[in-house]
Length: 129
View 1 (cartoon, one colour):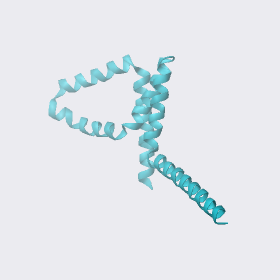
View 2: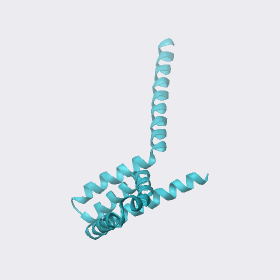
View 3: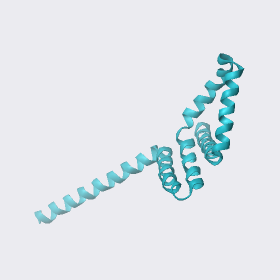
View 4: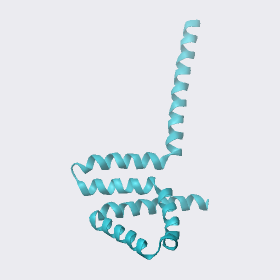
């Protein structure tokens, strides 16, 4: 009987250990859903880029927009002070560069904006609660 009880305890401990690991994985993914989701989009987009350049670019752009939401937001906050500090010419140069990037890679940049908007909506919904 002791052997059977000992086995049952070790099997129970093993199952409990596996459940604990599964719970830890769920918590990890739940706390970092943006990073995990944007990482998956990035990998899929890079793979698709070899076969379908536009589709891959869209997915990579979405991943960048979602992942770098805070950095992009901070950049736009600083950009409002840029005109005052640097003047009109440098501000027009930055706008020209942004337009050039829009012409050269339109779907990539549009998907970054869409990803940024999705992240902004998610942050807005979380901030409301």
